[in-house]
Length: 554
Image 1 (cartoon, rainbow, N blue to C red):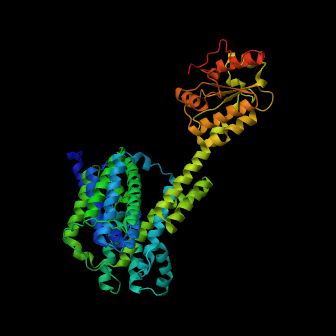
Image 2 (cartoon, rainbow, N blue to C red):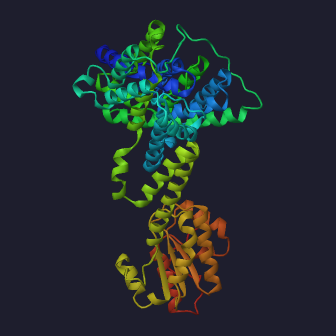
Image 3 (cartoon, rainbow, N blue to C red):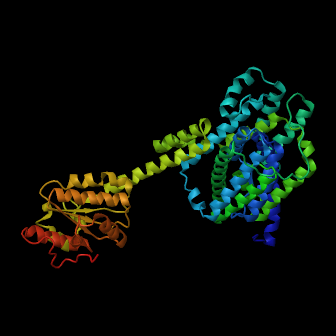
């Protein structure tokens, strides 16, 4: 549904027009880099841009071909030998997977990617784009596909450059990097580089050009799968869906910060998915939320879905009317525009400051960057998320174990209430009272038992485990508590447990059975201390006779 307001219409139309002007050279360049041709880049921007805005959950977002999506799509195009039915089936499946992400409300989880992983991934994408375009800037086409093939072509291109292509490419880079800011408000640098570079090429001939580009409306492409390529298609579709979702939701966060709004992540995924499904059916490359185009849209007045939809309609008009003019655009001009795009994608701000932060974050970023460039994009992100998660679990586990203290014997008696302190005054060496703070998880479970064993050595007769500040624990932590109870039996020490929530109580009683009798569970630490002191003062008394203590009724 479109939240239409007349007062926003002028800003939306101007924002969409400006975003469309910026998107034109980028869509052509990304389309050419994908292998499917510049028109496929335009179709991607048109179809995904329109339907993602119409059905999405971020009002001011502009969608189109992006660096990460094009890098993956180019690999798919090469792996499937450019077969349109198979290649664009991948885009359709990727869109369908994104719709499922939204339907099953996975948007909130897709955004949970640590910043060093995002930084390394995006910087790796920027490096790949630069590597793929470097030889094209010199008038050479890499003989082999992929990043390695592109890097191997660079020395040959440097040794035997096409001088006309080199001059045009250098001019494009100069304009892209040095275009005056006051002129950029009127004509964006990518568009200026495209127009000037192409006009110069009309007089300075000899550089390879795009050649014939289809005009008019696109044709329908029937999706199909065959047994020999089904695995490639599905793997690529999952990769495109994940990358497109992450890319789009990160752009949505940028839009939120600029507009002081809040996007609907699951709805945004559904919109992006519908757009990619339609694009795949009509020969458009996979696309995602484009940060730069979204920022330009917002800064020039775009606030609602109309701006993104108008951006797509503007590009459609260009395709219908002006496509023949694009045939004269030199490859080297588009390569220069993409090299500037790749340079902008590299997270230089973080790289320059990373040495001041945690070394682990820097190492993680560099690992993801390296894997992105030389191994595989989805493996890079997967490895980064897993390693970051393990590091986080280790950090939390260390904090959990730090909170594990023997209150009675480590100078922490100030944590006792006045009544508890009086009870423990003469018996604390024979009673260990362990308190912990926060949830206990599998990260701390491995060292939980050994820590308690180490701290409870000596003449102690009773170990009290106080869970009054523990909201939850998982199965691994519960098994660690069971280990403490078994160790207590072996060393003739009673284990009392106090202050549990119902969830913790049920888990421990179900797991440990009679290892810790029900009479040794208490509602509060004071009750557990009362029973422990009574037992210590009269070792001949029944240790399960709790007197005034209040055992839990399980």
